[in-house]
Length: 375
Image 1 (cartoon, rainbow, N blue to C red):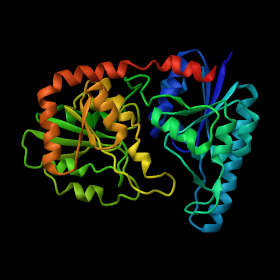
Image 2: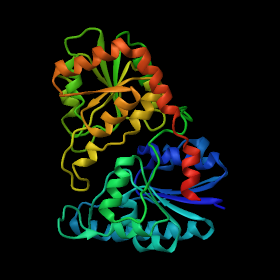
Image 3: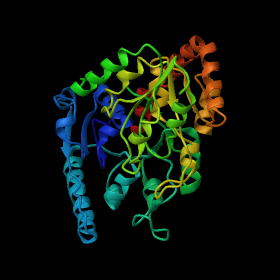
Image 4: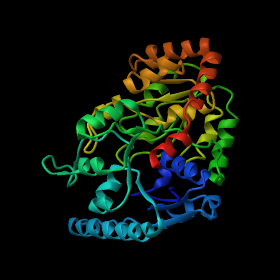
């Protein structure tokens, strides 16, 4: 009988809605949780921190500018996380890691415990050192030894099994929010909400990570000459996408609302007419190009929770649920006429698609899935 679980997330867990969903799920099912992560305690909802069944252990990631100090900090960070895990696991029944980076941080320590290995992305290999092509960290070793491997999509489950020669197909835990009501709203979020509430045009909304693999501004171009639509964008901008805010100035009907910590970002979706799910397959140091082709975005569930039909790029991870459940359309290209064709289709079928979204959101029982994983 599992009574307590230690969750480890290297980095800021507040930027990962599936981690928040997992915490809420476990606490709601009377399982104590220790969370080890790097998020600033001051940014975590007080209601969560005040829950007697929840313990938070902050391990700050040390950073440095010089190559020598970077190498030194790698070992310091690993030592700090491993010490926090060892202490927590003295009275915990299961260790749950949330990302491939977390597995790399803990290494062989994972073999000491009953371990659930969750993957947020499709991962074939992880360089032992960043950008090296020849030396890999043995992720498959820890996946093969894990109690369960957890992924957000069935296609990814079978791909991971084939890549890593896993004895069992990984369990699918959808990237669905456990609750859709935020614990509390910051003043910045309240100010941004006032802006979107006043909007009279039909809102196309993008909520999520903003980077080179998200062709958001193609949608802005498509509706630039329409006075009945506008585009609102919220999310964290990638450090590599330094021109994004400047590019926004080329469009008159687009507004960037900033980054809002999950789950407060869900409050904006209530005002959306259409949700956007753009994914562009690009090469990455860590993830293969098919990571985007088999995307499993939490946005699908977030938009669906509020009955918001979607438009996405033409990738299999979107095409399949959109066609199977009637919750969205994939644009054949990113040309304005193709995007506008999707918009017009949704306008004609909006009420039907909205109802399909609600049904899609309700179809997965997260409580049962997590119970099956840990037991």
